[in-house]
Every structure is written in structure tokens, then in C-alpha cells.
Image (cartoon, rainbow, N blue to C red):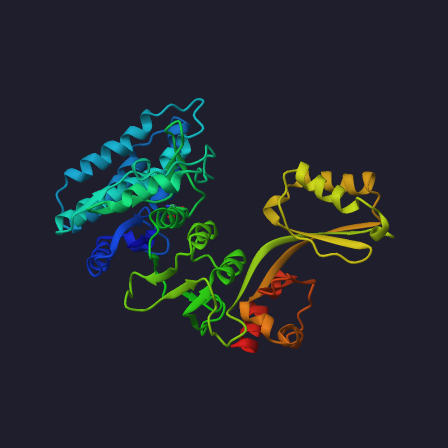
Length: 448
Ligand code: ASP
């Protein structure tokens, strides 16, 4: 049994849906199909999910929504016409898009989620009908019928305990199930979505629930490359990498798969493969449990910007019991999530994502550190990037950091910080964002 998820660009047009049909028909084990909303057909097109957001805003402000609804329904209708489908399905899609406007605005924390989820939900209905008209025994399955019971956290849902047992019930289905991605239902029967890009999470949860043999994630690239092809055009494709490596790369800029989508399949020991709808014969990138007999120490190099660093220094910091706790407690009270915490004897740095630091929170941090913790110096450095060199095999090689720092020094790139966790699966450098591209290119040349 395979769970096969198709992303928005794979479902954006009639031509793409034909490819998806051919992929599903080519393998009888593809019986659980998870779908995104229609994505972009060309670079400056609008994703249906984004159009639904506009529709939501207009509805909430009680503005005219006619053009929004028309545009959204036409996205489905155009595909159905081009596929020569029976247009009865479009009537039901139209009714469902219109009905969103019947939902209460006041005291409804799930209103936005209901709009967001409509993109996936209606696409699943369309695709099930398209498959049936093309000879497949396919049925649409709402996440509530699939057993996807989630927490009451709008736009950030998590699967509730016990859901895997419920999902398992669908594994005996006779027909191919078409399940909309991106959302589940709460105990009170409200639609609640995962975070953006969350259809990958649905696929992973279904795969874990039915104990699939494989989770296939179809997108619009031949898999994952050893560096971002926009930065290193000659970057080589990665044929296989481990879950840990994938997690590290996804953390710092590799956005092929939603990072929360890795956990369910990883815990259930289900292999994952990332494949290309436009080139389905390409083997893609396999995400596996072990690195097996790979020789190469480094599997990929990633980089991500928009980091800031709070640098604190205080003489005899190492002797002041509780200092670190007080700093971290302050962050907790401000609901700030931090990323890294490199330290010296008398200094400590906190690396955060820029979005965590509002001007108000920044001022409160400055006041607290000066007034309560009486630090000697405090600077907040912005426009920083993180560069990660990733490979589980690095622990068996000596000199990886030496080669990396040599490559960076040749390009005159100053290292603001270096960090390596005890698992040795990655080495992280913090540098100024203006050097990010040059750093990735230099490191790619050094290791590949
Ligand atoms: N359609 C949703 C989004 O654009 C979820 C997804 O595509 O995975 O975020």
C-alpha cells in the first residue's frame, strides 16, 4: 500500500491532472491519494488557497465577494471543461464555495480555517470525479471520515492521540480514496488546518495510520538537490538521504517538504520518496532510516536568512548560578522561541528567527538584561544567515570543519558563530546575510 500525495503545482491544470491520473493508473498500490488545492499554473498566478484568503477577508469586512467566488469556481470549472467532465461536480463545488459565506463571522475562531480548507476539499471532489470518469474506482473521503481528529489550534492543528487507530480503519477500502490534505476536524466538528503547506502533513499522517509501505510525495522537481539550484545551478540531485539529514536541511531553507511532515512517517519507520509529477520515471529522492553504505561525508548544504543574534556579556558570568535560566525565562515569558545558544566563559549569544523579535519585545529584552541582569554589554545583530553542512557520515571523517572554514576564508567570509551538535549530523555557521550565496557556492565547491 502506498500513500501518494500530490502538491498544488501537480494539480494546477487539466494537463497536470492527466499526468496525475496516469501516475495513479500505473501502479495499483497507489490507493490513498492525498491532494493539495490547485497551485500556480505560471509564476505569477494565484494559488487557490491564496484566492480563498482574499475571499475570506472580503467576507469578513462585508465587502463584495462576487469576483472572488467566481474566480475560485472558474479555476475548477476550467479544468473540468478541458477534461471534458460532467459539469455536475462544478455545481457542487460552487455550492460549497458559496456556503462559506453562510458561516458566522462573530465568535468563530475556525472561520479562516474553513475558507483555507475549501481549496483542498473541493479539489479532492473534482479529482475523485475525474478518476471515476476515467475508469478508476475512486471515492472522495472527507478527513473526518478518514479519522483525522485534530487539536483545536486554528492554522496550527496537531493530530490527537488515538487518531492512528481510527485512520487504520480506512486501510481496507475497496476503492481508491481521494483525501483532501491540509486539514482535519476537531472534537467539536470544526475544520482546523495545519500550518501553510500542510497537505504534506496529511499524507504523512495517513501513511502512518494505515502503516503504508511507502509515502510518495509528488511535487514539481526531480527530488532534492545538494544545494539550492537557484544558488548553485549545477547542484547534483540527492538520490537518498536519512530523515535526520532531511530534517536538518529542511530547517535551513530546503522547503521541498513541510518539516512537520517528516515525524509521523519517521516514527512509523515508513520510507518516503519525493518524486516529480512532470518526470515520474525519475527515481526522485528517497528519505530512509539509515545512511547505509554511503561514502560521501556531506549530503547537502543549505542556508536561510532572517536570523538575529542577541549577544550578552557579563564579567564572571560562568560563576553566576542561575544566569542562563533567567535569560531563558525572560524569553519564555515573552513567548519567544530561540534557535541556538552558543556560549563563551563570560558571554552568551541567542540566535533567533527575526520574526520572533517585535520592536516591543526587543525593548523589553534590552530593559530586562540591563536593569535586572546587569549585563556589561549587549548588542543585537541583525541580517544574519545560517549555513548548514549536513551529513550523518561526517562523524566518520576528520577535517570537514577545516575544509569548510578554509573555503569560506578564501572568499573572505567572516564567521560570526560556529556550532556543531553532539550528533555531528550538521555543522552550522552564522554569517552576515550578504555573504550567504557566496558561502553556499564556496562550500558546494569544497564538498562536491
Ligand atoms: N494549499 C495549502 C497551502 O497553500 C496547503 C498545501 O498546499 O499543502 O498552504
